[in-house]
Amino acid sequence: MSDSQPQLTPTELHEWQQSLEEANRHDILCHCRECDYEWVASKPEACVCGSKSVEHIMCWQFPDG
Image (tube, rainbow, N blue to C red; front, side, top):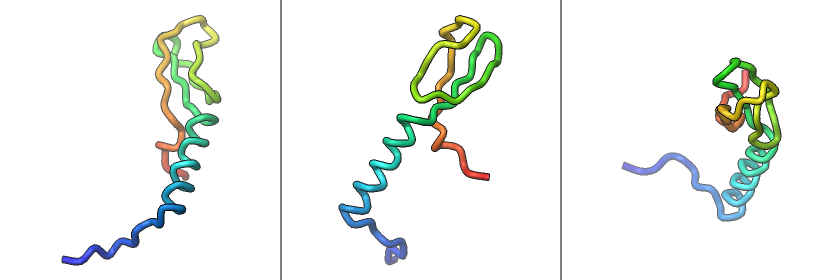
């Protein structure tokens, strides 16, 4: 059975990895487990209610649309 999916060149792979790293640095969905407040931040942070029980999810994991 042949592999019908094209392979990335080393340059394309590097560019793809860089774009994921960039998204990780700037788009983090934060969800407070205490008060259910949600926001997007550029780094993991505590909630405005003061709770540090916050779930941090990288936004690139969510599909567009």
